[in-house]
Length: 151
Image (cartoon, rainbow, N blue to C red):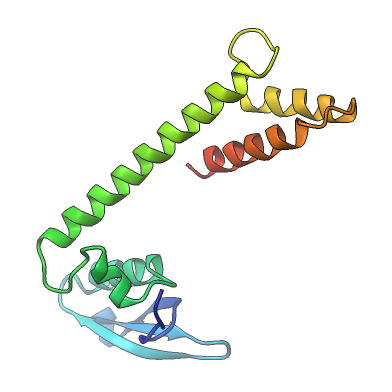
């Protein structure tokens, strides 16, 4: 990715004005925060929340990288493209997880459809018994467990 040329994340929201008539969006530095933008109007709170959520979700990605993936600055299709990409990535992740689980079940003598936890326990036992290939299975199973936990 190319160099980041915008105000660094994380961004946060602070209430401002009389009775919260507007919201300041601040960049949080180590010892202080400074204003990056301000939202006004009836929906200022929700507008600020959405801006901050989007900026923080894209942390580490340059604007050029985002535009390169179709996330343009002035496009109605941007949201559709983003949602489509997220759905595609989630579907690919799920398909790969299932394929990996199938492969690991084929290589495991446990009967039925053992859980990832049961498979980890089995391969930890195999490792303790000196099975040299157990580390590979444990690596894959721990990766599966981490992904499943993050869903």
